Image 1 (cartoon, rainbow, N blue to C red):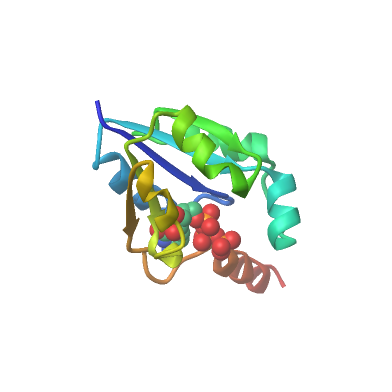
Image 2 (image 1 turned 120 degrees about the horizontal axis):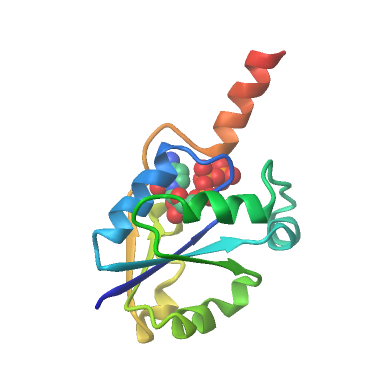
Length: 132
Ligand code: CTP
């Protein structure tokens, strides 16, 4: 059993999210996803999400290939989450390239290329433009 873990906000789910989850799952046979809480998004990025943490968790849980979800309450606890979920591989998008290398002592760390041309921020800007 090879266990994969990844983290993210996953607000307003889009194809870039689906693809990274699918590609992460292909690296092993069990995928756990840490969903950043509303409080974490606000304290670290001053970002308010469209969907609540509960809805984001439920939506990601419904994606084919996702085996387990949990709330990521703190960025500082990533190492603990990796240990708690017995992850063999930490997967992050390459927007984070190099930033999680400290966890190489706990598990393999893989940065996957992001899907070009889409992000939640960009989608929200497009929705605002259409609606105005
Ligand atoms: N991701 C991806 N391709 C994209 C957008 C996101 O592979 N086009 C990946 C990120 O690298 C991350 C995960 O999806 O590993 C969750 O990213 P998140 O920050 O929630 O999504 P974004 O669309 O980047 O959101 P935002 O615009 O708010 O930063």
